[in-house]
Length: 136
Ligand SMILES: [Zn+2]
Image (cartoon, rainbow, N blue to C red):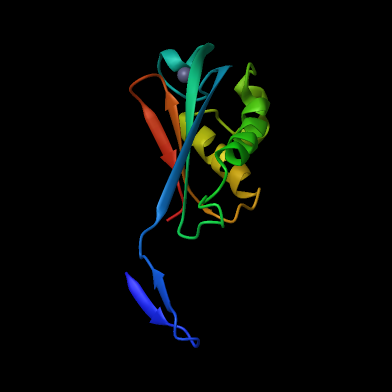
């Protein structure tokens, strides 16, 4: 903790900690992996789970980093473009791998200019496999 004396003599206390918020959502879609040697080259579907992590250190007057509902609304706009779609037809994603999906969601969330830092997007392709995209 840092304690700083401000001009009126009051002490201003600031912690060095950070806050991390996480929301999750899901979508169902079909895809096939181009250039892949194996079953995933065939048309099939998944229920993808999407997790979004944001970080920041400054809370508002209420004590909130960012409203969960604001984040959920932003994510649901992006998920809406993917849900019940054939992902190969969405050219902006590229080959619809878990990696490219996580980057696509990250890039589109980042463009929405939140006052918190978008830390990473994690996309689950099944119950045991996920990919994260983040910027170092
Ligand atoms: Zn697949």
